[in-house]
Length: 215
Length: 164
Image (cartoon, rainbow over all chains, first blue to last red; front, side):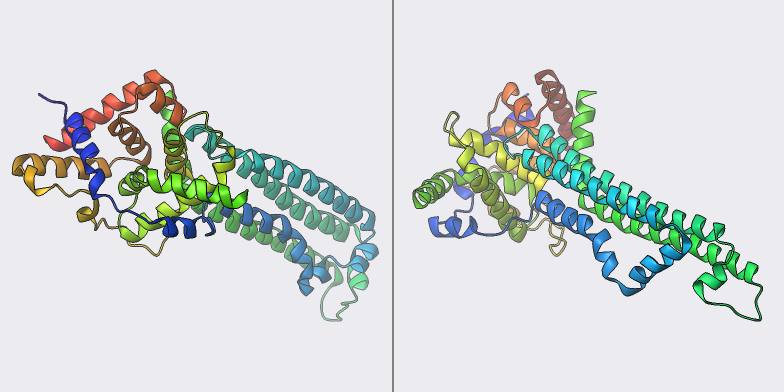
């Protein structure tokens, strides 16, 4: 019995005449269109991810929270400055690393290598995002510790209220700050991993299949 | 110089466009998706063209870029329906060789191939294009032995679909 696939092969090679045919002009127009490849998407989204932590400072409430005077009055100003310097240094390193790996992606590689390089590029951004999330938590942490160590927090913040015990108010504020820190980090992480998962779903599936073949 | 390169590229692609259409016919579900994928492959080919030095045939080089785009780079647009609705475009059988039993079997085969995973389709595509196992393995980045093993599994899979 003739192999089914060989039967198909014979037919497949006869099919050429039934294929659509584009003209020179149609193809010429296409080379100037924008690519919508996953690599381009990753590039755009990564740029947003690199900028996002910096864009947050443009939101008034966020800027107030990180307010210089507040930090200064809590006596944690130097910590915040040190963390900011570290953050920028690490961001520059990641951007450099990202760009290098992005440039390595080549459609001329074999399928597996291509996928691997895309994932490596993506992983750079993933590590950067994890680092940023950790920094956000850390900054919240420094504030919380600063607040806890401040004996006159209520005076510092100028929110003295006759009806509420200052000590209770202090711990309430610390509680709110802790919950806000965790929620904020959680939401950012959620958005990021959802986006990442959706973007690379097909890619991951195919990569796993290729890798399993070699197992 | 640039104009010359553009002209050279478009002419080569125009002459070899069947390869891209065949890839699209396996990976796209309808005419719109077909055109979309064709366009993305064209963009990728054009971007990579300066690196094509002619040490391999243009068509050989196209297989790799086209499949990489279909399997890895191309993202299906959400707006497009997922249903398959254009058998008539590619899989027509010419009237003079019409054989009802064979035609039915072939159409079953084609629909079975379409149900395969992206990677399996790539293997089948290269096989149908008469590529040898070393070329198949090299395109996908797997070993030749594994390409053979995988191809045999796909054949068994297709046989089961055809003779349940």
